[in-house]
Length: 467
Ligand SMILES: [Zn+2]
Image 1 (cartoon, protein in one colour):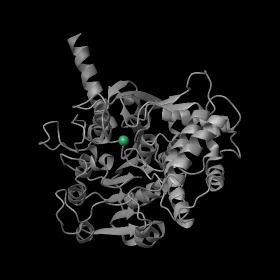
Image 2 (spheres, helix red, strand yellow):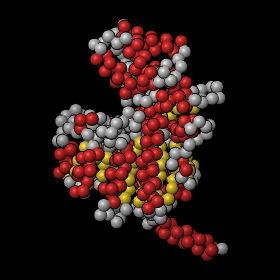
Image 3 (tube, rainbow, N blue to C red):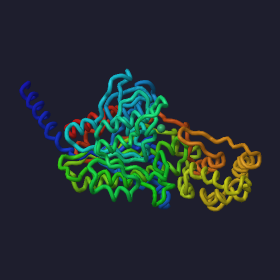
Image 4 (cartoon, protein in one colour):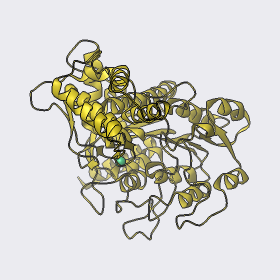
């Protein structure tokens, strides 16, 4: 009996060894704030547009393996993106606000991306937010505070990773203590990184770039990529960056790669409780998943794709009491609440503050479908009129604040009315402790088929990829 047991152990061990070298290519895709309802809501919204009740599934929910991850941090039942990013990157719980250090805030913990790099893999970090934002930073930086942006950018240089793609580095010359430091972009160039700004510049520079940092055009002046719902052709998209990353990481490289892709702006839309914008962001992340899936189809025996979330944001609820949903009404919102707010500010300038009620009605009709596509009750009209009266007649310029945005009251109320008509509500302006979904496809995917802690995910990747 003992001998048989021993044989099983040896067999099991050698099977583990066999599977170890197979995940030569790893895609680790994280929807920031993409809880279960953000996904379910998006799929039901797409079905409603097709005139049916049910779902039009996104690509990643059709992956063969599904698990659930707990997300609490070392300091709170509700995590922030720094602690969640550190857990997902390194397998260590830490306190909220902390990047790549354990819960003592002293000892560095190293990410699955660093382990991949040490094994000779090329490594890429992609995000729709700033490259020094918490989730991407957790894969390469070690700082006690997530807003130590300058110090985090220096850690990016030290990492020597092969590709970074995102909006920007937000504090290239200003240390956390406010003092001026040597420009991080110059240091990046000295270290051999080619800096590309926007897609056209990327195309020009990629043929000769060994290591690259791809960011949004300087003139766009953005800390995060433009929301998918607001983007025009001049803006860089997460899908473009994903394609660029694969192109860079596979050139002259037969050793494989590790690529982290974050849909970071889902979280921002959910902090603003902006359902239409959040749904467009989930659909946009799915476009990057499609690109990873195309790669998988060409390398099915060597590729692992994980799609997960760091936490839920907003406490998004589908259905507000009447056992009904009307998600399709959100299709009439064609810009984000934040972009609508900017349009109201522009209008104020254009009309030298003499904005009429008719101007506001026509703007809200054009951008949110109010009155034109979406019938308005007297009470709803009154709510917007009161905000108009307060803002433009009485001249009260106080804005509505959420974590990442400050918006005109009128735009917040208009978005709120549309959410109510969709029967979507939000219980929070911050994160919630709901389970994060884990979808897996490819080599080793079956190991994600269970209830797990978020810290398990990088540990399983490390095993499957043989880091
Ligand atoms: Zn957040």
